[in-house]
Picture (cartoon, helix red, strand yellow):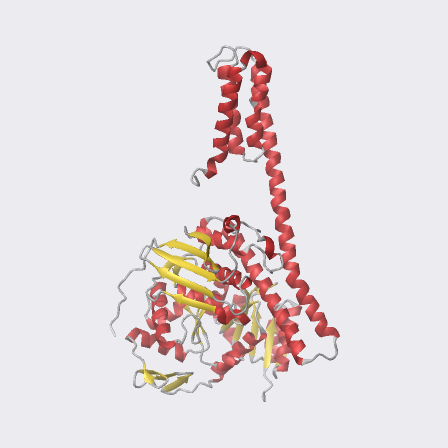
Length: 341
Length: 234
């Protein structure tokens, strides 16, 4: 089913055309040629509203052909004796094109709006924390050391969060580019996890992260910087939804042909629909409005994983949630460097 | 700090140069600020600084060219400041003669640590000895030994050479090609998988927690840094 999903518009249009043909054939005399022509515009309208030019043109062409074949005299041939019908065909195409074009424009605008809203929210939240806390330090003459430290930690945290968001946006822009943007080299996941953990070294929950990596793990052919970002986003996400004192477990294993990364954190189960949609850009769980983050992290995880031809999924387990990533090993480092003790 | 060493900050953004200058002052350094290459060259001529902090993104030209020009005249440490996603620029400037780098956004602690360790290297405060201590590790060059907490480590010849190279060049960024050339030899500069594999096995032998290394730090896209100095973390 998922295989056919990208072609869903074509499927829908075929089904629509078939039923229209059935109805028109059954009530041909009652309806008359003009109404039948108008009915044949329905699939064009339905598909054009999705803003996909390719499928719109396809359905318009099939509508015109069916109409021509079955109703325009001479019937059961593609010949057209009365040239005024050519006008009808041109109008079909004009309608399809115009609606499709407009629908596309509206969609792009909607995405832009969500993008801007989320971005301004996610940049402004940490920024206002930085500004607010800095002005406390500037205004107050006497601050006790503990408050002062708390204020500074807040500034530091917010700056880190902004920094992560900016890195994510930059990487995201890089991923929107073609495949060639990847900088492939041999990557050591142990190394990558080490670099990723560096980002959280001042996080008080840092010690709750338990790492276990298969000691026999082979090198992986990938873009190391992006893989670091993948692990950072997974850990960042887990930290956000894990309470103090609860465990986060990052496990990496290898089974010859695949490398599996599993990030587990103790939390409430996630709703079924959310498990799938979580990876969509700017999607955020309903109850999580108060938790800082852009909803961009997991979508970048998905982009990074698919750029490496891997798969990512999320599922509930007993008292927690798992994010599982599977990479297939397509390339192994050449041997010949075994050395005896 | 007893000496009043002079640091030249070449940076066109005032907010950054002010912050860097202020914190260097607090740590006992004198500073000068140049906002472009032209005034930087003039200040170098007239003041002979002891160290240079150089932002690669300057308005009037290429930072790498400036590094080469400085190198022709002065033997002083140069620390490069660069934005993320510019690893190629960093590597090129290290090749041009820069000694170390920090990536924006950097913390002042990080920058100060780099300044201190670059200075130590230049002042030759690391005497030529046969036994070097580094946290729990002891490198005995003469006897071809590495001890961890007093116990001898079993290392392959390549592992030993790699660790020796690291400890001799501790606290300093080492680009991948340089390590490969120095440890494996000319012609191995692009054999990244050798390096990754050996770093992995070496870490398993010397690091208390491989996922949170304290000795071998990865500088993503650039190289490794072997850390011996606890003051790097203060």
